[in-house]
Length: 196
Image (tube, rainbow, N blue to C red; front, side):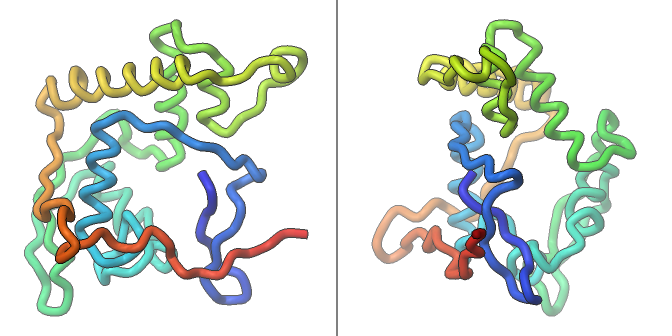
């Protein structure tokens, strides 16, 4: 977690993460593949874009993205101005009915706490939290802990999502694999907001 986008003086900038909690978040293979496909699906440095193909910073994210996912939405065909407008019908996610998107963070932490074999320091670091006291002073996340988290999340995906036929992503655009079809730049070009 390197930066977050926000507005400063009415312009988009990159700013430090909340509470300056810089961290690396190791993700499972299914999520890495999804991120690759999303980045390859456009020529922008952003993974998630608005219907207009622009960063989500200027979008009402709840109304345009979260509520249709949470509450379900009817199929939508392409509009005359926006090819990205099209989407398949989305079934409601009953477990998230009425919930704020922040609830996903709580769900993620609860999932990691569930198996009981993932050390607390690794879970809290992933969430951007610091452990207090002696435990916080002397504990550190190891590669083995990260591998345990990644393996567990991959199993959750395969068994509870794909295995239960809840959802399988479709990727309409092949990943870039040649200089003629290069990956987009991973840098936004936005100025970085420096704190004193």
